[in-house]
Figure 1 (tube, rainbow, N blue to C red):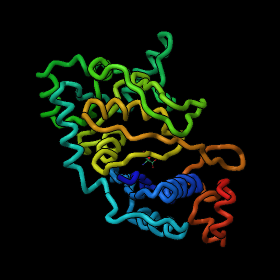
Figure 2: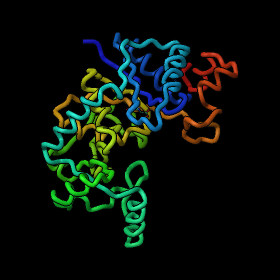
Figure 3: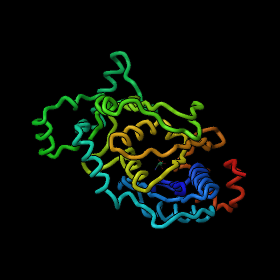
Length: 289
Ligand code: GLU
């Protein structure tokens, strides 16, 4: 079976040089290994994703000289598949609803910080500080029936206890030089959100479901997602899904050494193309010559 690669951008802005690097690396790995390259549009957030950004993804990738298989998988067309995976985790009693607003969560974190410090996840965001796991079934049902917004969270302690020790095969390198067999530490993320009242999935859940459904064998993506792999391995084991190999690559930075953002014109592919940059110049800027 040929190896299967995928590039999986979110259409919530224009692609930048970092995306170009990731997409070209996937394309190159697929070509070198006689593999397949899939394109997946990660558009589960209707408030941030826009059709013009999706269109720009196709144009910019084609301009870069990248070819991908059809059909493109658009996550927004597969919500029932994520709902089914969520239902399996719910049947294992690993999911609970939390009802705090963002403001309430910020207040709780402030309190915990004042009481001696509250842990942050690998991205620097505070772990979920609430006690929604303790709510009675009756109280949950009452809040939901009243129309309260909620997030469905993974009970991390129970999930980790069920899955046991986890690791993954890192064929690239983590931000701290990690390589080879890397031990997963999903507990560092706390009770992550798996779905919300209005969206039956989240980044973590849909990426794991899709990589398995699409038969992806090597995930090539930026080091900013290295630590998220711990959550992905946990969900794969809980859902009995196969584990791809992971190749995390260096991040492209701007002239000041900052991580690129979709809002910066200076490193956006659209703006660079409009300014007359060539494909060769792009490759040079991202160190792919
Ligand atoms: N959709 C994610 C992003 O644009 C990438 C997902 C992945 O490669 O796992 O950052």
